[in-house]
Length: 169
Image 1 (cartoon, helix red, strand yellow):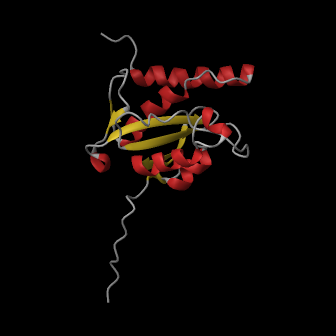
Image 2 (cartoon, one colour):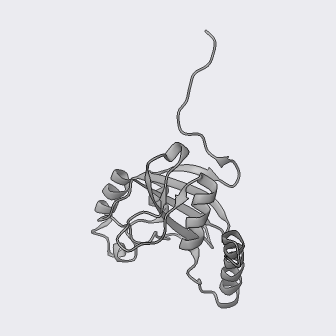
Image 3 (tube, one colour):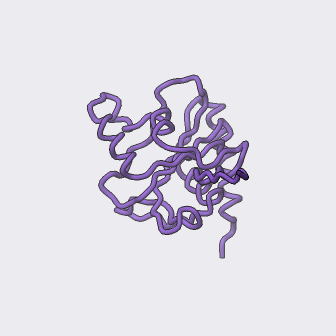
């Protein structure tokens, strides 16, 4: 029997991470776990147990049915600060799509972006020559440029990108 629900634990983790950042100016390192939870909750994904050698965090349902989803999280404390980077992409492991969950200073999600494996790996290949690639192969700005917005705090789940002309003629 679980003493605490996962939702309550994540809510408390958000609070502690934000308070720790305000008190010390340093990040507590919880963004990735919070991002995994938020991606599953907001996009209807099914989290998989963390396992060594598995390159994905969730299995897709609905729009993402059958896809293996790698989730990255990044807390953005100053949107004007350039060069914020994603963590290392698990390029040698199995996954189909990468989701980037952007969190605000309270560790609440404000945007989720996605890009397919081929697009991400191509962009990672282009960045390998960079000295910064050791800290993470892609910047948040680059990922947003190659991917697409799938969820925002303002609009919720974004449309699936298909446009249908229903104008009468």
